Length: 420
Image 1: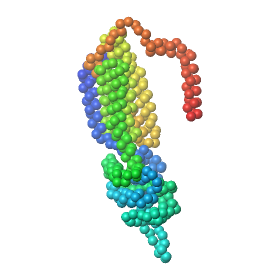
Image 2: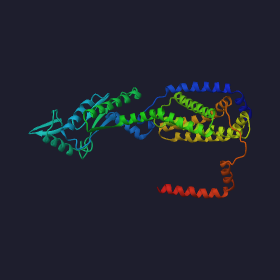
Image 3: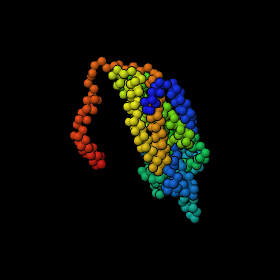
Image 4: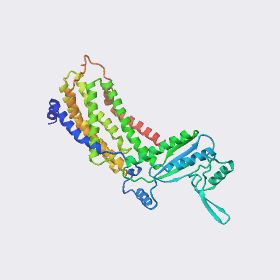
C-alpha cells in the first residue's frame, strides 16, 4: 500500500503539484484576515486574576495607558533657564498628541502656598520668558521636597525629569491607533531635540511598549524570515550542490508556511510578538523532513540507482522516521496549550499545524517536484572512506561503553549548569 502510494506520486507529479497548489492557495487566502496586536493585555487569559483586577481598576479610575518622555540634559541639571523653558514648551506641545487626556510635568504641577490668609494654587513654573537664579533655586527646592514630584516626575539628583502623557485610545482599531500616537510622539521628540541641542528625550510608557511589541513582530517577518530563508537555502545548496533539490525544499517551506498562516487566519488567530515567530520554526522543521529524503535519494543515486527508484526507496525508508518525528514534535508544541498566555497557545497550535503540513507536503509535493525537475548526482566510481559511516560503526561497536560514559558526562554538565 505504501509503495503503491509513493509510486503513484512519482509517476503522476503534475497532478500532485496541481492539487497541492489548490490546497495551498485556498488555505493561504485566510492570511489576509491575520492582524497584528501589540497590546500587552493579550498575553493574559480572560480568566487571569491579575488581569481581572487590573481591568476592574481601570473601570473605576480610568485607563492607565501613557507616554513617558524622559528629558535628560547632556550636562548638568534640568534646573537651568534654557532647559526649564524647553520642558515648558514640550509640556504644552504634548497636549497635541492624539488621544491625550492629561499631561503631567514639573511645569504644570499644582503647587500650593499661603499668602497671609489665602491659599494660592498655581503652576510651579510660570510663563515668564526667562528665569533668574533665585526663581530656579525656588523651583528646585520645591521639587526636591515635594513627595509627589521627587523620584516620580523629577530625579533625586535633578538630572532628569519626565513629561507624562495620559492616553485614552478609542479601542476601535488598535492596529492604527497606537502607531498613530507613537508616530506623533516620535516626531515631537525629534523636533524638541532639534530645537534644544544638548537635551535628549527618551520615550517609554505603556503605549510605546505596545508599539514596540507590534513593530518587533512586523520587522521580524519583514526582515528576519527572508534572511533565514536565504541562509538556509544557501547552506542546503552548498551541501547538496543541487539547484532542483534546493528549489524543491524552498517551495515546500513556502507552501507549509503559507498554508499554516492562512489556516490561522481562517481560524480567527491574531499575530503577536510570540506567535509571529511561527514561520521560522516551521521553516526549520520543513528543512529537517526534506533533507532526510534528499540525503537518502542522493546516496542511492551515487550507488548507481536511477532517480525514480532511488526516490521510491528514500520515501519508503524515511516515511516512518519522518512521521514519528513530525507527530511527536506536533504533540510537543500542542502542549503549549497548557500555558496561561494565549499568544503562546497560538504559537503551539500554529507550529504543530505547520509541522503536520510539512510532513504531508514532504511525502507528496516534494517527491513530485523532485520527479519533475532535473536532478543529477555523480555516481561513485570507487569506494571511498565515508566518515559518517565510520562514526556510525564506531558508535554501534562501542555502545556499551559510550552509553554510560556519555550519561556521566551529561549528568556532570547538568550539575555545572544548576550551579550556575
